[in-house]
Length: 282
Ligand code: SF4
Image 1 (cartoon, rainbow, N blue to C red):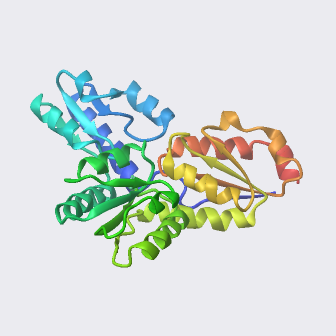
Image 2 (image 1 turned 60 degrees about the vertical axis):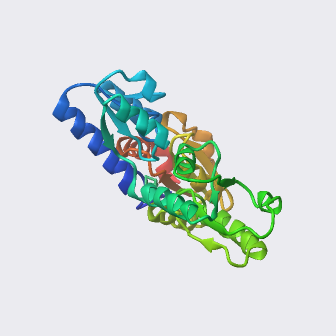
Image 3 (image 1 turned 180 degrees about the horizontal axis):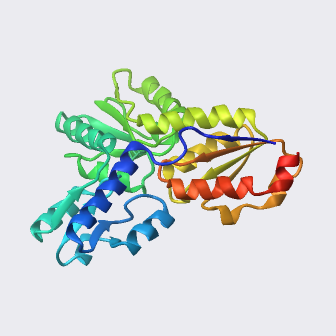
């Protein structure tokens, strides 16, 4: 049996920084701090953080005083203003890659571009991006939505940072055929791209892939989509979900993890797999 563990499995730069910042802030204040929405998209890590005093709340309204931390995906601007009005201490853990897109949306919109955001309407990052626009923007989830746009618009395009490159390129092709002068900004972050590339490479090599990550994690979902095209793929949140029957007649397994999956969960999955003696006799 061959086991390949992705080199890029687990926390990306932005998530690592957010978790470290939250822990450091808590250690220095010894008072609960609140993240507006989950700090990252992994419920087990959010639970761990909550136990040590970093608590997710659904909105700024729920916090009377103290410190809030802005999560990696950012939050809508009006929530930041509300926090300022309440004189809350604000720690900004928005990932720099997300900040760059927020800034782009703001500037392009100021310059009268009709900004198209390739992304998921309900994703917190996209909701935050919309709030930076000074004029209406449009979220594009599929190429079909391009067809309904009127001609003659001054178009600029950005992407949710965790979009799949394949989908981005597909939609861009459609946009370019309709708007020759559209300004295109590929804002998919390096961490997401590297993980997508590695996922494809591993999925082509193995019989089965296990992808560890939150079911609410967009970048994990991308890895699942990519791997499914090449091999049998199971999306798990923890080792407890692993079913031995998945490995009947299997000779190679790949283990990947989304950018918000902590090392302790990845290690638990690896040791769970290594503990299966029967597998290693194959
Ligand atoms: S996936 Fe990319 S954009 Fe999202 S937190 Fe990580 S580095 Fe930042």
